[in-house]
Length: 112
Image 1 (spheres, rainbow, N blue to C red):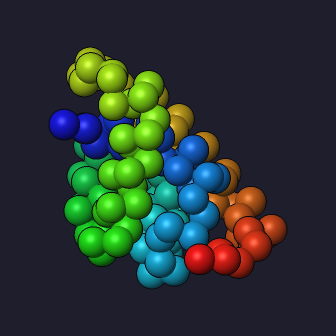
Image 2: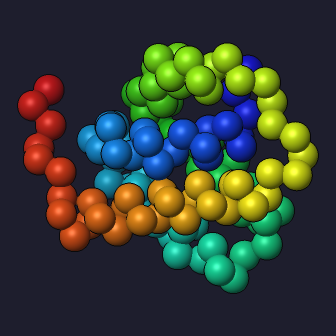
């Protein structure tokens, strides 16, 4: 089973490669979490991200699950050690940069 730190680790790549997989509302909720990174404890960040991952629609969840399944480095990875707070924060800062770039330069419409 994939853990929240593992999901956070692939989030920047997922956002880059699947820019239309999440709804506007889901992305807005993520943006709110990312906007508070500097003022939020690591525990609260993980709690907020856990709730965010659990709040996805079925289609969004399936898209994320499929992405995890196709990325062997994630699905074959054992659970990270407990001291991954810095890595979690770094991955979220990277996700924040991806989102800022997408807002400044929106990806082309999805043809599906």
